[in-house]
Amino acid sequence: MKRNNRNRKQTLLAGALAGAIGIVAAGCSLPNSNENTSISADETGVITETVVESVGEDSFTEDELKQYIEQEIADYTDSGGGKVSLTKCTVANRTAETVMTYATCDDYAKFNNVTCFLGTIQAAEDAGYDVSQSFVDKKGAAADAEIISERAKEWKIFICEEPVQVRLPDKILYATDNVTITGRLTATVNTVLDTPVATPAAASSDSSVSSAGETQTESVKASSASSAGGSGTAAVSQAAEGGTDSRQINPYATVSDYYAYIIYK
Image (cartoon, rainbow, N blue to C red; front, side):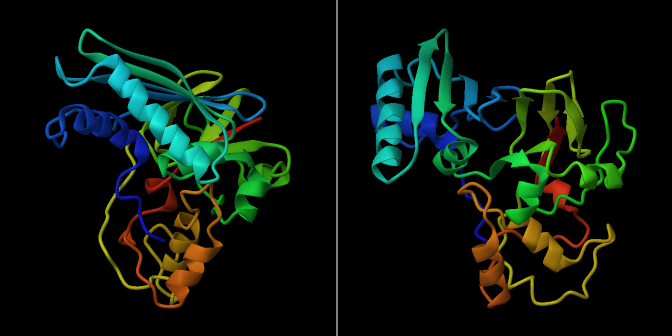
């Protein structure tokens, strides 16, 4: 699997700046922390994303940013993508704010070139995600893996690879330890690893086990959920056939170092 070099969210402001001024956006602050990006999902699976970002005094106008994003949406739609809408775009007082809606989590993943999954725990496992993680509740108490397994077809899970504020449509039960559950419906995804280092196939052996008890093959399987919504079969096959993986498989890292998992009802 090729690690995302840069997701589309990180290029929207940079692209608007380059298009408006004709230069590379050197030094321009970009969305890369959970302080300026939030994602919410409703009961039907519609994703709403809000990004608030500081920009230079004369970086670009509101119309220029809006035009650039709308062109990105048009390109995505023309290439066969689903429904994506820009519902708010403002540039004022050196702050740019955009609100975008995505018909599905798959559209969010594809448009932004990131891994994102929303569905039942069983569906996530079927899509290639390793859901056998160590989960904790809001108070830090360990979840019962057997109960999670029993409710796999009932309980839902949100998976992402970005530091972001998350709001889900029903009560959050458990999350991996790189997530802080902040309320009944809200959570904060903290820093996740991003090491774009070319490595040879890491799925060729089942015998190399990390200190966390996870084989490197399992790491590749878990990280193979593609940025196009989470189907990881092709990526695993590529690694097994001797392809390269742009993310180094760290034998001391667990799956949750690369992805955040949030279980809700």
